[in-house]
Figure 1 (tube, rainbow, N blue to C red):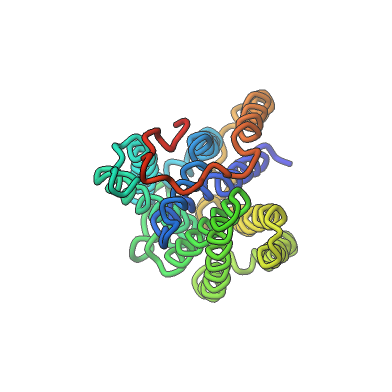
Figure 2 (cartoon, rainbow, N blue to C red):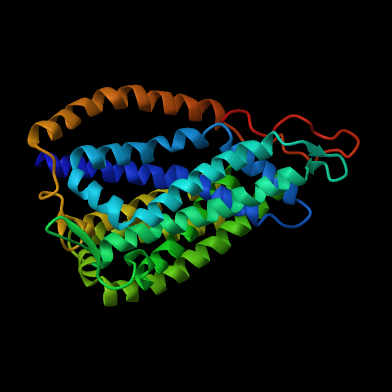
Length: 356
């Protein structure tokens, strides 16, 4: 394997890790925004308790992808920064706003009348929900833009073939698909981490989100055939088809496990499903970073730089992975059994978030 291919493969693995972990955080914000019914407050508490200790750590994978991109493929990084300037900055704004809103709402004054956040807390909650919904849509639209062929890089000059490439129909469809996947991930994770009525609530939401994901995949596939035929052919190639097929099988297994109330199996299958779908996209997209003008090989940094990146990765991962593993083992080792309905006589005053 050539050095540039190795760096690209590591970046794809980091992107999958970001989708599986931070994607569920985005999905948690979606369900926070759509919490309804007599257990709405407890549903929001479940989201906050699930995200609180780990949401900042999950963004390390996005930073990892960005560092690999500008170090290993600087010309591609420059072209993406120019061609997708607007959606990238909106993504950055969304990540900042949702993180700030999550913390400010947790530490906002409580309302004795509603035994929940006061007016300021509700406003921050609205910001948190909107930012969590919009950000994964924009990320999916960016993936669609680099695959549609509408973002052109000719002689180092970035231009758009027609309207903004991230607003093309295939990009919009992929944005909606990314939103559904994040919602599904979060609902499955929360169903696994809660108990009783809360578990039933999130199980139903997982089934709804899974149905939406299947429906949107039916929409995305014809659009790929029409507007991104190279990606369509790549998905059906001998390299990518087994990976995509494994993702489809994992999706069916996840749905079956939810119906049978086997939540740990559903969580594992959902992780495999998401990893296979995004991995299949990366394999089908290869060797292009931006189709059809920027390839992995043409955009690669000098060989010594790539070798340094590859040789330094084991040392960095040796520090990062055990730390993340310990973090998840400490904070994600059991069900959220503390989420009993709050008492009106004893309003809760402590913040929901333990860290962050």
